[in-house]
Length: 140
Image 1 (cartoon, helix red, strand yellow):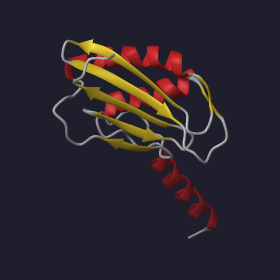
Image 2: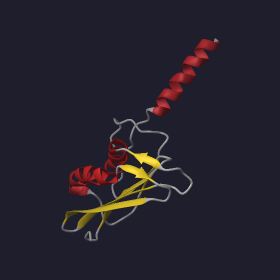
Image 3: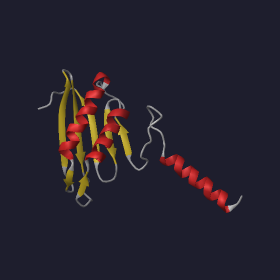
Image 4: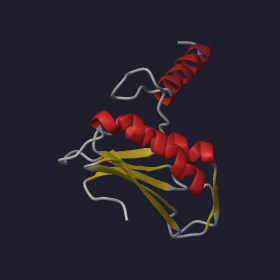
């Protein structure tokens, strides 16, 4: 096999990995550098309130954007319906310098969790840990 053929095959393999598909809909590219953990069990799920949860991602990310010092935790809870709330959290790990969270990064990451994780879950992109969970409690 020629060297140029090997390079072409390697590039195609890396490209295929980098544009992996989402497990739920098969169409949306996934960021392979992010680590997502969906809650596998739970009595609550987004269900009919998923669209409202996605609208509330916008509200939360408008409040969350800005500079995060190490160990900063920001949390917002939104009532979605009588029996369901959405709890959104963004935090930074202890070992990082201050990091800037943009609205676009926040909305993409939290939106990915709401879209891909039935009960909610968390996603670690290296700079921030995002979480979104469907919860039974009313927001305070």
